[in-house]
Image 1 (cartoon, helix red, strand yellow):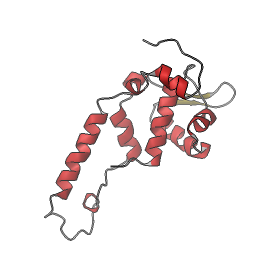
Image 2 (tube, rainbow, N blue to C red):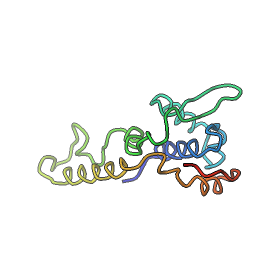
Image 3 (cartoon, one colour):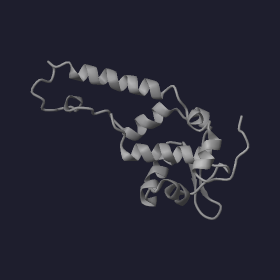
Length: 149
């Protein structure tokens, strides 16, 4: 299974915002840190705001900040929302034209694999992904941070 670019950017944006020393950052900062187009990140930030995960504030002193605690942002939910409906093969699509649909066991195996994928992701939160804030700060060239508890 390969995540879409949108999902990848969604996860990176959340990690960056959650690990940000001030708790706030701009789309330009996220774009520069990861070498991503600001145009793409505007779409990501808008969708995360629509889902209630990010607070997007315009104007001077604005930027992106988490709208809810990082510990309450479930990775499985984030990925599922960003990826949309699972369509691992044509048999997942209503009206698909596979000649062996209904007789093949592939659909069952893929559904089981997809469920396992999301079950593993559901065990993690954004807080888990950013618990190494000091290492993230070094990688993103932020000033050294005090330890978070």
